[in-house]
Amino acid sequence: MSIAPKLQLFLDEAKADYDVVEHKPTKSSLETAKSCHVPADRLAKSILLDTDDGPLLAVLPSDRKVELSELRSELGHKPRLVGESQLRQVFTDCDFGAVPPVGYGVTTIIDDSLGKQPDVYFEAGDHRSLVHMDQGAFAQLTRYARHGQFSEPSLVD
Image (cartoon, rainbow, N blue to C red; front, side):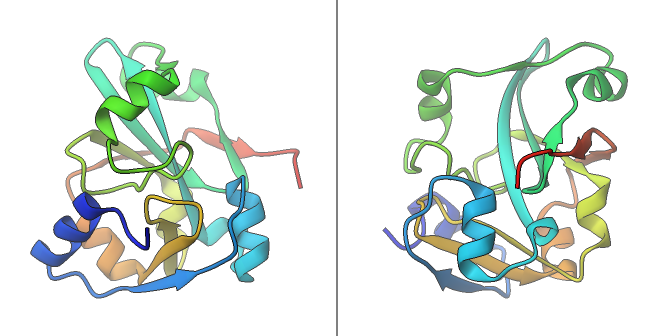
């Protein structure tokens, strides 16, 4: 797989300007950033959460971790991480752990730190390819997403 079919359709319909970066299979977003020589703060990772209002996709840089208490402040209630089966129900054409931040109709919240980057990379639905676009294109694709500060630096290198 090079790019997940639903993601491809979404990007095509949005007439998004992007390129695909192929890489050796990786097991984590930090490993992907290192493998692709991409700054970790420019590689967005997506985490599906369960909230009182339904599923929520939290999007943050790969070198940061979700701070659930901060999200509670943003949302008014504490979200919970979803299990693999629930994730597969939403992202039917994506590998586990390679969830893109757009294209699947899930309510999304984007960490403010991503907006400070000149360009953004994100998983294309597998562990072998990334979508790359400039900040303007990413901002246009995520214009209806909520924004907030809900991450903190990860201690993992």
